[in-house]
Image 1 (cartoon, rainbow, N blue to C red):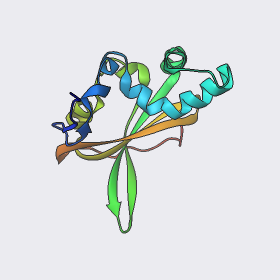
Image 2 (cartoon, helix red, strand yellow):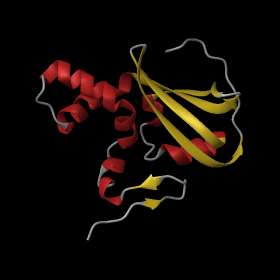
Image 3 (cartoon, one colour):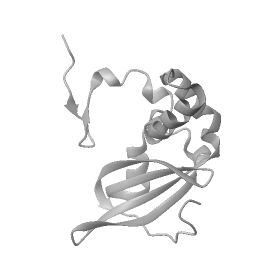
Image 4 (cartoon, one colour):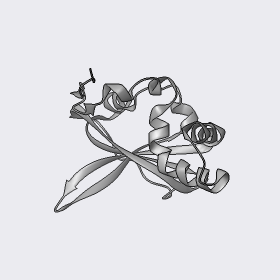
Length: 145
């Protein structure tokens, strides 16, 4: 019997068959970097690469990446992005799930997390938290720094 998808406590649909060991192995960093890793793996290993090679590659350079947290604010027909946090990945490596970290530090709302490697944009992921907003906008010293 197949396991059915369900809505987790953060309001997102979860598929139980996907959540085997990902949370033990920096799964959210892998999700942030997945497209970047595919590109790097295709260049390094050719068309024959797998998730294990991608994961090994990620662990080789993950300590050199940095993260920026943005809050998404509706503005007219679009969205406005306000920078609310900057971190080196090594500061957040112990975090298993980013949603409680975001909720604790920035409150409720919609957030975008960008990851950068050597000054280059490498990936993004959106998250939604519940509660009252408690974020404070900070000044951005550079687009990728």
